[in-house]
Image 1 (cartoon, rainbow, N blue to C red):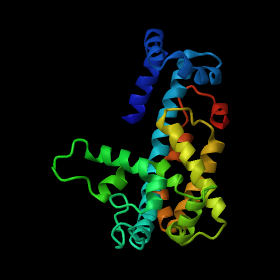
Image 2 (image 1 turned 135 degrees about the horizontal axis):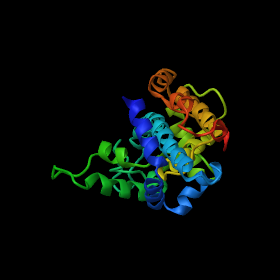
Image 3 (image 1 turned 60 degrees about the vertical axis):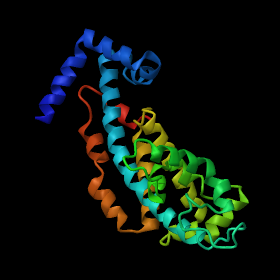
Image 4 (image 1 turned 180 degrees about the horizontal axis):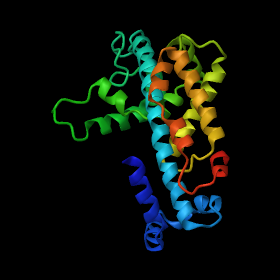
Length: 251
């Protein structure tokens, strides 16, 4: 039934009137990459755009596994660390709930992100109670986790050594290798989130290797979850009606 529906959609995209309407909805600047890869043929460009949507959906499923695993691994370590930090005003330790009672370092590194996430967590709540730590953590973006990892900031380097390195107990390679891979995954996530082209199989394979590396560094069994969920290979192998194989290898 699915193949039949796909064929019907393909037939409709071959209709010039339908193709023109769909192209107008996408807009010329956003469709230009697909037209370039389709030798200017509008129907082929729209089929390529549709394929990109399907591929992006498959990639997003894998990114969700990665984000959930990374977020919760890092949060667990931050909870432990934050609860050892002394509140200078009270002389007591801060709470483990670092989004609700952040230490000075966490306030500096993630304070703005925490405030935005707390606002999002509070929107549409059925309960009158304020968002919990877990509610706020769930609203933090992938970028928060990526930019808590070390760069040139001494505070981030300290946090890595004192806390976040523990989120990756199976990391066997250099710390820099892990950080560069998380950065690449973050960039791929932004491309998918903004509906940009992700047609290059070399790019996708490279980032899948990075995802596997990160998950394996957290807990090797997570790669089983990844393999059982990912349909990226199926989407690529299925190809698209009327779209040349050459477009699959474009980056």
